[in-house]
Image (cartoon, rainbow, N blue to C red):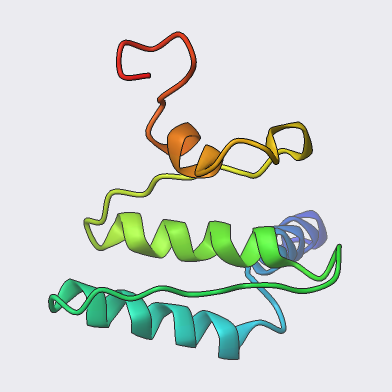
Length: 104
């Protein structure tokens, strides 16, 4: 292998490994186990909390990809500070129900 081919191969390996979720194997395994249990008919809920910047969003994105790969429908929404007065606002957003929708 030429030197430039080796450099390219190394860059490809680094790029591939940097897209993996690092340091979250335990929580990812727990969430994956919940998915497996749900697939067998036992509904589950997971509560994920932590300080800003520790990877909660990335962990959820990885879990969502696993779920999609297993045939689950995945919906997502996020809470908004200005909607704190709106009960179930996140659920409404997840279901695309808004003040101007026919379901409102």
